[in-house]
Image 1 (cartoon, rainbow, N blue to C red):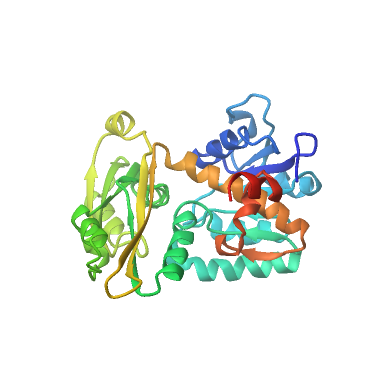
Image 2 (cartoon, rainbow, N blue to C red; image 1 turned 90 degrees about the vertical axis):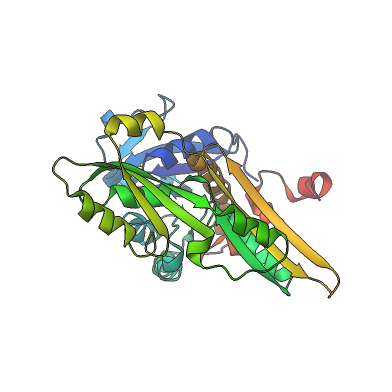
Length: 331
């Protein structure tokens, strides 16, 4: 058990929406302390939520190895984490939020190789999906083996997909919203077990600000054909002004459902539903990352090294409470 007198020392790599959320979340956990923010930007230009929070250049991280218990990586899944996670896992315990589902096996393999060699503990793909939704999919299948699992996202702003949009050449700014098909959700809740294609479950809507001189049709085509992000969905790209983006698209709501419907006998139909309704996607994701940082620190102390996912973490390791407290208060 950590305490205020001996807190878990956390380092944050990257300081966008997720990094700011992690800083705020650490402030709500008395057994943790934010040792420093590490950035590729000029540290003197970065303004953390709390003026006393130390800000360092990312290339100074190696010299601070003994000052940190866990690094929380807050970069994007498209270009940052595939490189940063294995590089840093070779030397530090880490948690990341890699969320490109189709590429998780290869990301796991790269991080596991580095963490195993470095004898560190590295947890990837923490958040709410992948993360909390993943756990509920496993639980649903285990409890209702005769059934079907469905995941719906939104309506909400997707950080990962928005980041992918902003990295398209010719894009000056943009966001992407995921919209679930309510008709499909109601069919699932009624235990119909429908066969739903990716396109039948969701649509994606993008709002994009073009760089001066950019070819709008080329940008649109690049977005809608992007593998793993948009190519399997009906995607609409709306071109707007920078003023409209600032005025109408700064909030980051999100949420969704994991539903398992099945039968425990021919006569008894059962439905398990897990729902999230979030005012702030990055703040909730950050809170999940911070809880898993606590678990990573404990697992490392127990000698459990290599790459891990949420499937490998006992729920009690996420809580600041002792095992005795959990049994008395929550079991």
